[in-house]
Amino acid sequence: MRSGFVTLVGRPNVGKSSLLNAVCGRKVSIVSDKPQTTRTRVRAVVNTSDTQVVFVDTPGIHKPVSALGRRVNATAVESISEVDVACLVIDATQTFGRGDRFVAERMDMKRSAVVLNKTDATTHAKIAKQLSALAELDALAYFPVSARTGDGVTAWMQWLSAQMPEGQALFPPEMVRETPDTQWVAELVRESLLARTREELPYSIATRVTEYEWPRIRCEIVVERESQKGMVIGKGGAMLKAVGTEVRMQLAAGAYLELAVVVDEGWQHDESRVQRLGY
Image (cartoon, rainbow, N blue to C red; front, side):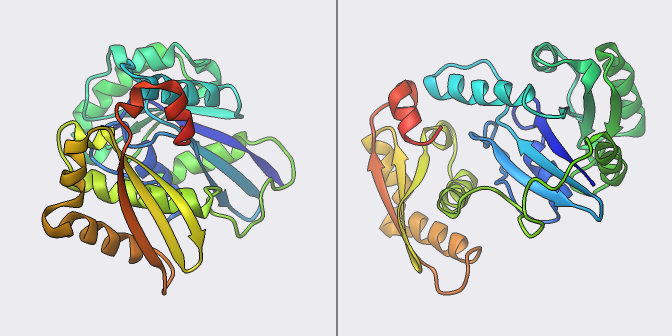
């Protein structure tokens, strides 16, 4: 038996969460087209007949401009040294540049793999050019993959399994995600809001479950300004109704979800309030 930890690190919006969902065969981490969707570490477990790989999805590493940004950056960097293999995920549709190098400098690339994601969205010639440029990192291995189509994912997973140290399973075989149900519901609410909001609003939103006594769940949506409250509620409550309907469809039958919007002025710029919201 082999078992161990693998972390996924990279710039925002390179598809780390989508890749994790593809490996697990189900949603274990929320996704959106907005950068910095992931704000906390998300652990997911993949079992085969003789291997257990525990994946750690991390926030995108970026140049922070707020207490929230500094906190999520620290979360990602801390995860690099706590695992058996670190994987630097890079967007195949973007030019390999300063942002990717910034992340790579925080890793021991001789013990890390490079995963070139989103290969379905570019050409073979551009993929080859990317891999040639990435050779400067002198990584342990390189894998072109597509989270959307699954291309290359099996070969990457087989390699990761072989890198795991010998040892018993770290989690029960039935476990797929380590995220508590309260955090998972809050993340599903935030994911739905990310899909429906624009400009600066997605980054001003935090969500937290304040009551969980099945089947009743109460989730607060925290915004930074009074003007944002009405935007989240929507005309006649339309936005909240749509969010509630979408989230309930992803929960067990019978769930009663109550959504409330509260204002915490400038929360993402205050370290203590960022921590209080679970980041």
